[in-house]
Amino acid sequence: MPTPRQILNDVREPLPDWLARYEPGMIDAPTHGARVIDAFLQGRIAFYPGSGVVDGELFETFTAAHAAHGVLHADLRHPASRVSEILGRRFRPYVHVAGYHPLDVRVWDAPTTQAMLRLTPDHPFDQDPNLQGACWAILERDPDRSEAHGPCRLAFLHVHCEAVWLFWNLWVRGRRPAPFALLLQDHGWGGNWTRFGRDGALHQAAVTSGSLPRWLLSVPELAWPGYRRLTDPPPVRLVPLPAELSQGDCDPVGGRALYVKDDTAPRADLQDLDAEASALEIIDRIYAGSMTSDAPEVPNAPDAPDAPSTLQTPALTSLASPHSSRRLYFAYGSNMNPAQFHRRCPGSDIVGLATLRDHRWYITDRGVASVTPDPGNRVHGVLARLTEEDERQLDRHEGVSLGLYRREWVTVDVAHGGRVTALIYRSCDPGVGRPRPGYLEGIVSGALHHGLPAEAIAQLASSGGMPAPPPDDQESLFVYGTLLRGQSNHRHLAGSALVGEAVTVDCFALYLDGLPMVFEHDPVSPIHGELYRVSPATLAMLDRLEGHPEVYRRSRVAVRVKGGSIIDAWLYFHLDPSGRIDRGGRYQPSERH
Image 1 (cartoon, rainbow, N blue to C red):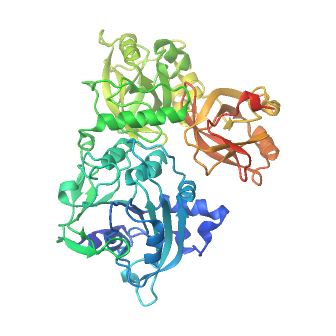
Image 2 (spheres, rainbow, N blue to C red):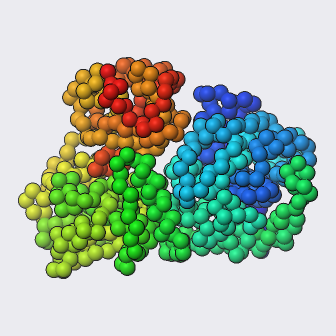
Image 3 (cartoon, rainbow, N blue to C red):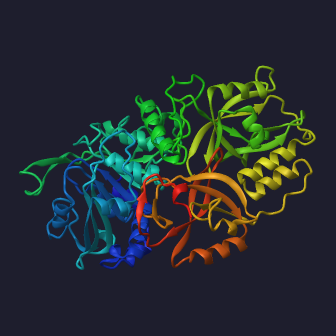
């Protein structure tokens, strides 16, 4: 059987540009520090959710094979300052990176760590994050070592905190790609008092968000379902800890095999979690509370007998689960029209865009829409979160009891990443015809309202002989201060269409010092405001008004429209805010000018 290094040699990756160009102190520079961390977190990271010694196996397995160039370690046991001291030694039993010396080492306190990594204090499993600080290091290969020893540089981040909270912040809430690899340690419990194997808190967070790493290093009894073992586990060995970290203690190391995610495994195998319901409901409440101040809690409900488990995405973890009374519905026809949808489903709301793979949209001989399997094609639509009562009303409107449509559960791709299981209604009549008078116009109107891709809207229109609507060159802009209705600068939005009240999906900081200023790198709370559609000329004028990019910088963020979708929009961030922070993220009427 091949060794892990032999297997991983087939997935080698060149040194990332940011790491090759890294210079000592770069992480401290305000204009570069956040970018460096973002590049590190977006890259190939081997993640160690530890509760004890960093035994070096991630370095020895993934970085030595040039498959990963960064290691992130979360540990409640060891202070960042002591990790920094040990990294500076020639002999480092703590991290087992012999043949490397530190190019740059930084120790951060808890507030700095929270700001650099954009962490929120909320915990998906109601635990204490226990954030104490972090140690950041760039390690350089010794001159007497060759490329066969490993890459010329490695990035290492040790965070003194609770590991599941960190994973949730960085990959679930942060909507980043899953970590490249993960080590399932078997010698500790962590702040959740749960093993990190199947059904543990880490597994629940990864499955709930779809943040499943490609590779696992795990003892067989801890390996997650849906992963295929590629190597035999080596014998277990004992590694002594440095004296200042423990009084001569030893930690067991090894006994882990290399696993790869099996993309052919049934989705249900990855979701058969004994404790999934409670985990999803906790995450539901956290996200629902962070998106709007008056969002209701998702109520608990028994499992629905006909609904398969749902793989949630970061943008959708607050929206539905098969264990709650609200489930996801994929609308591809007339129910995309907001007026019709809210008339039929007054207690439900549209929550995002999605596509259905390997299907084709068509008009039945009754003059209404349906979908049929067609490999290689896609159907665009919107996702809604249904109440139980509205789901029953949809059954009636779609004529399920009359045999006109049948209910089915399908997997759809979410616009902001990930896949979810959703309800669709498929016509029981496969005949093809022409749309009823006025029917297609309502669908196209809904598609335009929700911002479906132009090519998808053109296809909808052409199916009934309608001319394609003119291209929309307008941009979405989220405003939170003096550009709001009734405020001093709102006149600059004259002629721009108000989409509605909205709130950012992610957390930022709203500073108030006469004028409101939102700062991108302080994750305090979601920001409340309004969403507009503006022309390129209006956006250029607002750039001049806001001093973009020297005073304010315009960046894209995800925002949720009240009663509508999650979409990307421009937001003006202040580069050097001052004043007090408004913890509610809302520019209050009493402070408006």
